[in-house]
Amino acid sequence: MIVYVNGSFVSEEEAKVSVFDHGFLYGDGVFEGIKAYNGRIFALDEHVDRFFESAQSIQLLLPLSRNEMKKAILETVRRNNLKDAYIRPVASRGKGALGLDPRSCPKATVVIIVDAEIRHPEDTGGASLSQKGIKVITTTFRRNGPDVLSPRIKSTNYLNNILAKLQANAVGVQDAIFLNEQGFVCELTGDNLFIVKNSRVLTPPLWFGILDGVTRRVVLRIAKEMRLETTEEPLTLHDLYTSDECFCTATRIEVVSIVWVDGRQIGSGAPGPVTVQITKRFLDLANREGAPIFE
Ligand code: PXG
Image (cartoon, rainbow, N blue to C red):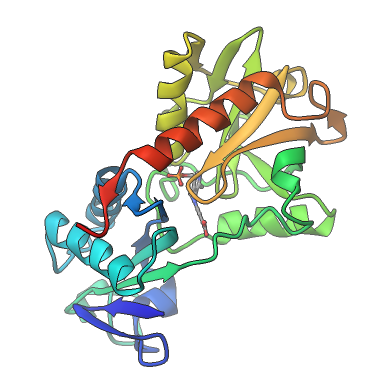
């Protein structure tokens, strides 16, 4: 694999970041997860915009413009000769002194990694899991609120999420649901959450403390196109437990049905009709729209 590191394209073996990089030392950085389908990068603008917003929020000055970033992403995929890829841009504070102060880091590190194999992280039990739906629990860890570390920042500091993932692992389910400080449902460890109730598509609002997921936005758009009523409103565990359908969304896994929450079967225990329709339309869109890689 060819990796982009600070303006150069190098082999995976040659790709190096300093052990003094504050991204490594303190988790001081931001990242994105983007996907290419069939020779096109889906929602490239949205991802690059969010990348720059995450950087702006943590006062990280990126050494390239949005346009240059887009070009670098397209070029990295092109150099790897991939039509379908998972793309991971990462920017960290850069090399500095042993101390938290970002002022010792004169230049941010920018890396773009691509992966040809699109594995579903939840699919530890085989590829059929995403078709069958996944089981999840509610984690005892609260989602870090905007007053601690805004979930709107896609930061390289995912320990909150990893702690929740460890809890899911410990009981042998695929993922965990975060509640916020008030006990309202937020999202999963790396996915946004939706429920379907009486043909209405519901998802928690952004201000509850969730990532502004690109897939979430697309799914809301698709649901509206399907003439389904959609709302971003407060959801409790009761709403989840009594939903007709439940699903999660993220770039990597797209749309995955949730069929079991904290011991309760959701709906029929299999992906419901609305989830299946939305998934179909999402894949259709993702395979049609996007920035062409080889033009
Ligand atoms: N919520 C959180 C907390 C996330 O980290 C999403 C929702 C979904 O957002 P998008 O824009 O992808 O629809 C994410 C995103 C990975 C990976 O390796 C992905 C995320 C986080 C960590 C790792 O694919 N996702």
